[in-house]
Amino acid sequence: MRAAHSQSTYSAAYGYATDKMQEFWDRLRGKGRKRVGWAESLKNIATSSVLNVFIVFIPLAWASHWEMVKWGHDTTFALCFLAIIPLECIFDWGGEQMALYLGKDLGDLLIITLNNAVEAVLAIILLANCDLRLLQSTIVGVVILHLLLIPGTAFLVGGYNIRQQTLHPHHSELNHSLLMIGVLATLLPTAFFAALDRGVSAATAGAVETASAVVNDTTRGQILKMSRGMAVMLLVVYIASRIYLHNPPGENNALTVPHDAPAELHHVEKDLLEEDPLVNPWACMMLLVITVGLMAATAEFLVESIDEVREQSGIQTEWFGLILLPIVSFSADGAVAIIFFFQSIYDHFTHREIIVPSMLARGRAIDLSIQFTLWWMPVLVLLGWWTDKPMHLLFDYLEVALLLGSCFLVNYVTADSKTNWVEGLIMVVFYLMIALVTWFYPGQPEAAFMLECKGTVAEAIARGPEGNIEIAISSAAAILARAL
Image 1 (cartoon, rainbow, N blue to C red):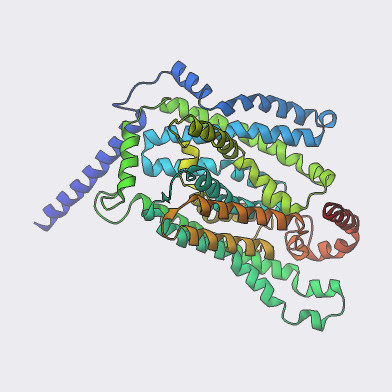
Image 2 (cartoon, rainbow, N blue to C red):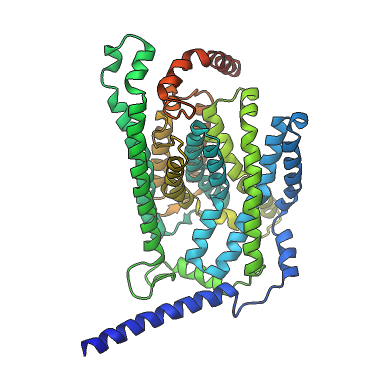
């Protein structure tokens, strides 16, 4: 009797799993949907966005890279910057189309991953080049961008003509906890490092001796060990959170919208089932794979031109990483926001219906920060371990303060799952404040010493005061010139 019951239970579970897999496969193939041919798919891809005209900058950027001596590093950087804009648009559009075939759960995960693709590629290339100081500031800049500028722009532009916008409470409640643990993971090594400096300056005589007492290979080795351990823990948290979101407690809830979910989520899933796709799934997959390849090459060319551009312009490394490089990923959304702003003004005066673009209407920016802090940041730490690069979670003190402040503001704004255009303005203004402060910030020397790739920390400290004196003088002159 018990064996028969167990067998029936197993059969029911196995049958359910088989039915779910068949349902997923049928949806992925587009069964029951309008058939979209390859010719029509290519046509819709070409006309998916007005920003696709920027594709002409891709061959120009590549040509500039191969002829960098003639064209100049600044030209290469600018062309690569413009070339990334249409690729980012293709990621957005392709992700939205694949969501029709994958459903809301997997579709959202794919869209978030594709939207982080630009920053992830840049980060991996910076890690391969062992430009770890710029990598860390870029990680912080990407998270701050996704926490403040992108959602702030969406709330500001999309909500100026309505009283308030509603976020999905089902996601925002968990997001607060996930976002906070990702940010706190950068606080712990920083607090550990700061706590080591207990009366060291009083016990030592010179600046080099003071730095060596705390900033040394022993301390770095300890921080690397704890960073790698926390990286694994962060990955476990992120994977567990995705399991919870994609297979919440209850029967037959895997990859479906739960019955107790807000009505808006059910409405979104219904729209995904009924909306006709503009491209067949195989053409869309091929498009995304090709776009990733183009993005990787273009991003590598951009990174190779960074050092010369930074030295010629006199821009601080902190500002370059915190503001300029992350803006590359926002360039497409920023262009859409500007176009929509002027179009909405025209529609307002001509009494036409104002339609918010999907790139702005969907509030996924905070999810992007969560994935970057809980997935990509620990992956970069483990990749550094694998490739023998001293990538760790000891960040600049100011960068950690910026992360905590941004996290606090975002959690406060989204606590009630409702926003308005004034709160969007507040988020954008705080981002501009950060940009202003970091423009004058030269960075923390100890953080750079602890990320030394070409030798020991002691060697970096020893050659620091002499080897960097010219850079320090030129940076001070540049800051003075900007102040005047």
